[in-house]
Amino acid sequence: MNTTHKRPIVLVHGLWMTPKSWDTWAGHFRSQGHEVVVPGWPGIDDRSVADIRSNPEALKGIGLKQIADHYEAIIRELPEKPIIMGHSFGGVITQMLADRGLGAAYVGVAPGQTAGVTALPLSTLWTGFPILSNPFGKNGAKPLSKRHFHFTFGNDLPRSESDKLWKEYAVNSYNRVFFEGVTSVLNEKSGVTKVDYARADRAPLLVIVGSIDHVVPPAIGKAVVAKYQKAGGPGIVEFKEYAGRTHRLVSQDGWEEIADYALTWAVAHAR
Figure (spheres, rainbow, N blue to C red):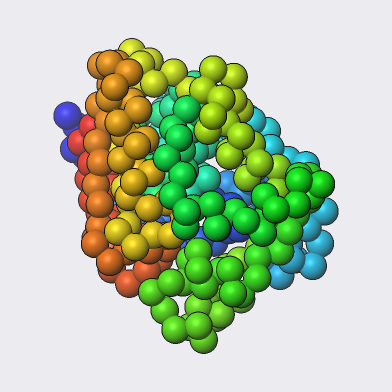
């Protein structure tokens, strides 16, 4: 392995977030000589949090395939296959991009499950309740309340500290993304998030979770890894859990340890 070569890295943000959520890891990786590309989802692009909240119209009706297509177009413009890392629903998109053979290595940071991974803990269902409770709002862009942000992202913090992070980072939902993700769970053969778990040429995948994550508890991360492993494909799929970490793995105090592990693993396994 050429240890001096620095592959580009593509970071895929999750639902309710913007590329700003990756500022920590992106800066850390750039300081080590990597080109880091952090695109926004269609409709978010490079807009500010305040702008998106005030005008979320561009988020309405956009689904997971459209987002994955958006990232694929960006990745195909790069001079070589990048390391691709995705957080939360960005981890779902990362697995969809892996199924298209677009990366040299993949890291799912608290990744949601793709089609056929049926683990759905109660805390995960609760995170989606404000959206899923209104099927007529499938193509909407619902705001994320401070209270719900505290449950989903800030459950290690006092409410006042969580509220500060809400103000800095949180944007409206892509409701369609949540509906597609949940309905795909029971539709392995044709769900929007369908992937070939036994794909022979898929580059290695690492799944990272936090032990006190309400959105993607360890049970989901383990179920994702088990799905690939039980499919019997030759690709490497590994699991790593961090104690005391929430869904905010990319910015919670001590994020450097996780970022370093993810990058070291990806560089070592990239092909």
